[in-house]
Length: 106
Image 1: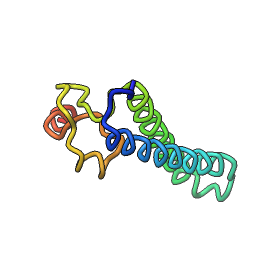
Image 2 (image 1 turned 180 degrees about the vertical axis):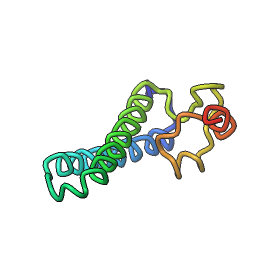
Image 3 (image 1 turned 180 degrees about the horizontal axis):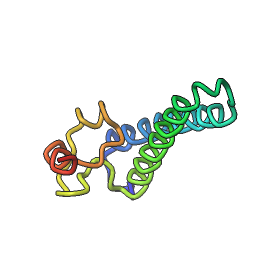
Image 4 (image 1 turned 135 degrees about the horizontal axis):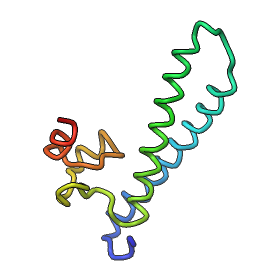
């Protein structure tokens, strides 16, 4: 889907894809470690919260990788406007532009 992109944009997406893939691998290893660690029963609640947060991160990374593969990355899922590059730099898995995110959360 990314065959019509300017070479700079293709390189940016390739770099982003590699970074997201690396993050996915790191989070997967962390999840494996968290689920294997029986640890202190008093820390079970904290471990459970870490597992949930790690799974959420994995879902967000997976979704971003799918959007890149489908050529939809960087486009708001609600209004179809481009998501500003600054927002994507801070939040690479962003699905919405800021106004739509505020409406979605509110």
